[in-house]
Amino acid sequence: MNLGAIEAGGTKFVLAVGNEEGEILEKKVIPTEHPSITMPAVIDFFRGKDIERLGVGSFGPIDVNADSAFYGQLQKTPKTEWVDYPLGKELQDHLLIPVIIDTDVNVAAMSEAKWGDAKDVDSCLYITVGTGIGAGAYIKGETLRGLSHPEMGHIPVRRHSDDDYAGGCPYHGDCLEGMAAGPHIEKRWGRPAEELVDRKEVWEMEAYYLAQALVNYIYIVSPERIILGGGVMKQKQLFPMIRTMVLELLNGYVSSPYLTEDTIDKYIVSPGLTDEAGVKGALYLAMGSRM
Ligand code: ADP
Ligand code: ZN
Image (spheres, rainbow, N blue to C red):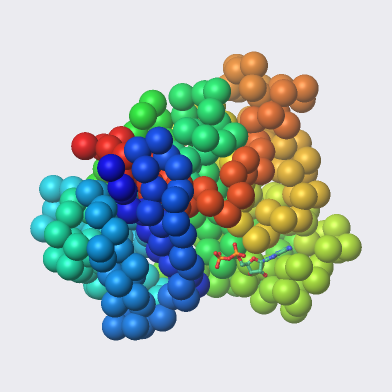
């Protein structure tokens, strides 16, 4: 049986045909443009490929509640051309097959749990620190969804004493994303994050915000592994800083063999899968993890 998978991102759509074993048989990447340009190309790719189900891991916010009349509809996304776009319905109407939708970070968490860095545990968080900050969670066979999907990038954070950056989230100002996403590193320090490699204070401040967030996630979600990806996390020096600060902030309160100086480098990790995490997670959705 052939299955379809889409990783719908803010800059590109990754389209794939795979099988029930989770193997990708064919793949194509197209740029994310206006829906009137991107969507016909998406539908063209899948037509005639004998797909029985389609899984989609999408940028958000998006309605991921399968019982909702607006299931699969994008919401207040910063990609303004896609606001309110009925992504799930369009795919279903044109391809006439079941379409299963979740967020890009939820499917990445699921993918890491199935094939990547969290294979040996029952729960994990996948956090991306890039143009925005988003996190997905996979817990004992299900991604975390409820009222909507989690919006862990928008939690409030305590301000660093040396930081006078106002914060750049259009909704909350100095939430985590508004303080620590790539574009806000650039605005605070006047240069793109990738050009600030040697500035220790930049990464200490970044780690300060990310460690606070991780501690909150540990308290609330209690994941057995935390995977940090996205462009900003290419600065590998962040990992030891974040690990140390997380242990300091927890101050021994949560007892777990994962949360010690000797083990935390296996708890807070970089992604195990390469750029296929999203599309493989979408394929896993189509394989029927939620049927
Ligand atoms: P997106 O979030 O759009 O999928 P990325 O995860 O690559 O894409 O995030 C882009 C952000 O990451 C930009 O703000 C960029 O400055 C930052 N970034 C990309 N590469 C690096 C790097 N090597 N070091 C630090 N920051 C980076
Ligand atoms: Zn915000």
